[in-house]
Amino acid sequence: MIKEIYSKLPAKILDPIKSILRQVLLILLSIAITSILIWIMGYSPLAVFDGLSNGITKDFPGTLRWTTPLILSGLAIAVAFKTGAWNLGVDGQLYMGALAATAVSLGLSTLPGVLLFPITVLAGIIAGMLWALLAGILRTQYGANDLVSSLLLTYVAYHFSDYLIHGPLKSGAYGPAESSNIIPETVWLPKIIEGSSVTIGLIVAIVLAVVLYFLIFRTTLGYELKVVGSNLWFSRYGGIKVKAVYLKGMAISGAISGLIGVIEILGVHHRFPIRFSSGLGFDGIVVSLLASNNPLGVIISGLFFGALRNGSYNIERLTEIPRAMVIIVQAIIVLMVGMQVIIKFKKQKKDKQSSNDDQSKETEELNTFNTNGSEG
Image (tube, rainbow, N blue to C red):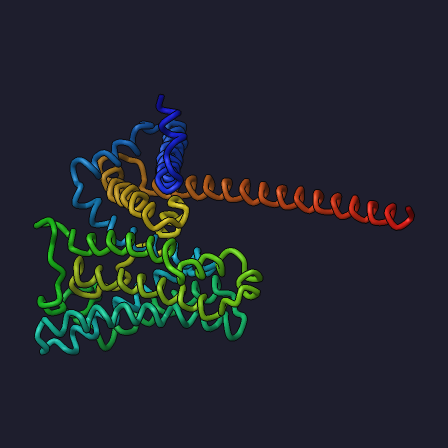
């Protein structure tokens, strides 16, 4: 009965269901393998499950706090990967967005909130976008590897932010913990859950995921992004301006990264603490891969990794198990996704080879037929 209903479902409904089931299976397998490793080390194999359950049931606001930047980071990576861009500089773009938002809000603090808020948000988004475009231009104009350039630009952003927080933006009000001054309250993001760090940024992240889904799968620009990301030669012969589309993808990815920095400053820290981001950009890679670069799937994987990250603090606080075990879970997920990609690639290569062999056979038969016909 269930099989009959399942087989009758249209592809538009069936594909998301398959994606969700795949995510759940990968998550359960990764946790199971990690639990076995923890058991071998002499700890309780249920520690990861306990950490996740505590993160969801006892500290759900803490899970949502991390879900917001992880969804956005996953979306930034998903857009880049769909375009064929290796944007590993999300953390750097995040920092530039946060710096711009901090500097603008402090520098224009006398403006009324109705003006200061949109200017601050736009400044952060544009800063992240321009930082990503820098890596994109290096590739399109000079042939530089975008994976390397975007990654190296992240460290430039790190040290540039260090300079500003130790110099022009230094507050001095927090002792040895270097930070900027508190930004005006008129630009603080409203909280969804009082007494927590969960703000309207979560709603923004979910809405943005839906918008990006329709952009990628329902618009001309989305089609061009996917074609450029999957087949450059076909894109060129199809009349698509590859460089322009690639830069658009990088711009969107960088803008989302800058938005992460804006939300972190305006919604969580309310100032720029030095080196405040703890690898959100690299976590976004795992979030996006788990969701197969699907914006709607990113919401689910972002929630899972939000619970995992929040639960990791509980694991380390309540047990002797280090938080590094959470990194092992992420690594196992990456390995599993990578194995699927390799298997899919080999299958496509085999199918292509089989198709070429069939075509060669048909050509040979046609040549034989034509030869025999001319002799007759």
